[in-house]
Amino acid sequence: MPAHQRPTLRELGRRSEAAAPVFRALRGDDGSPPGAAAPLPLLWGARPTIIVARSGQRDVVTAACPAALDLGLAPGMAAAHARALVSDLEILDADPEADRAWLDRLALHAARYWTPAAAVSGGDGLWLDLSGTTQLFGGEERFAARLLGFLKRLGFTARVAIAGTPGSAYALARYGGHASSVLPEGREGKALAPLPLAALRLKPEALAAAARFGIERIADLYPMPRGPLARRLGRAAVERLDQARGFVPEPIVPVVPFEMPEARRALLEPIGTAEAIEQVISDLLADLVPALRERGLGIRSLVLRCDRLDMGEQVIAVGTARATRDASHLLRLFKLRIDRIEPGFGIEAMTLAAPQVETLGAEAIGGAAFDGTPRPPDLAPLVDALGGRAGEAALFRLRSIESDVPERAIGRAGPLAKPEGWPSWARPIRMLALPEALRGVVALLPDHPPRRFAWRGRTYAVVAGDGPERIHGEWWRRPGEMWAVRDYFRVEATSGERFWLFRRGDAITENTGDLSWYMHGVFG
Image (tube, rainbow, N blue to C red):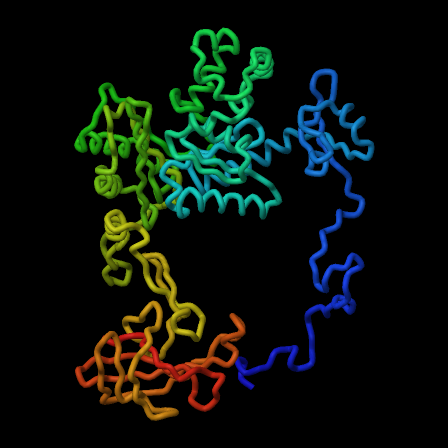
């Protein structure tokens, strides 16, 4: 039998899945109905677990499992106190170096795949500068969900907070109470107000002093004058509060997965015109390209960061379809995006970095090959220019995918790719993304093309047709395609159009389709 008509193993009398329990239909001892879900039992031999570290002359709990937290144990508690509260307690020694190594690995992964600026924060988290990158992942909410899913696959539980300042993101991630939260820029003060004072990353001495004065929440600091607040809690408390609310910048030191090629220019006077920005970009490229040539590297992406007088920054990026060191070509790509830079009161410094590079050796740029045939034109500059105007996602080539179903047999490839393996049978030049239903079809069953049909409000009379070409469903994808059949026909209308349409079902067996007709493509 053909592969698509073979019955399943179960119909052949063989079973590869586990059999149902014999007593599943019986009512439970507690009177629950058959098949009721029972609570998951605890793991055999599982005990509450804590991690302790040496602090001065005593051992302090640094982390606790959920079972230990339910029993009243918490980080910061003395290990002796924890042993007195819970007798059957498993105690493990902390390994800060191993924890730091894991965080460094995650930060390097983030710098390679999510954002160029990633740093370890506080020894138990990561800071990611997501400026201009979240749209690549569908927005901030989708990026946060994707990040949580990635960490879950690694076996970690985490909290993600996206905010306008590092301090507010730190506070919401650790004290916000939500697995994922996105705070719009400018609302830091209201969001931080109900959080405890420890969310500002204050030292233990400052927290102890705040407790003596009855200060428990961040909102308690808002009405206090800065001078008395600095005398009572220290100047660091005032600085942390301003950093969290965005009044004072808080730079982060990102990890560098490799020695990123970079050029920087600090300007004597602020600039704000497109001509001045273009000139500085040209100077930065003149500094960066020789360094790349010495290392044998070519640029695949460039990021331009403009530091403004108001402590803000503007970031634009360009990408290339192929590694290059052509400064004039890269300058043309940046000129297409200079209008996206908002200089504000002026730009005082500009940095050009190449986060993605590839090895680029010497290559011939003109002339003919050894056999005398002319070289084909280089399409990479044209692809880069069109991508700068229409977007990189607008440029692609079609590639063949191994599938019998037409809409699954075509996929996207890079604009410079050379797809191979195209089928030899005829296919329309234009194929619809989804087949469109036809109305008023008149056809002689089972193997004749239609004589007349209506599509998109217009009736067509057929003068010639070819077919059918039978395509069976891919039963291994979903059970509904086990017996599905499509009969495709190429038809020509009296007005000269040539169409590619199909009928669902073979007009013999009922379970192969409902005999409805659909338009799937247009020739010419």
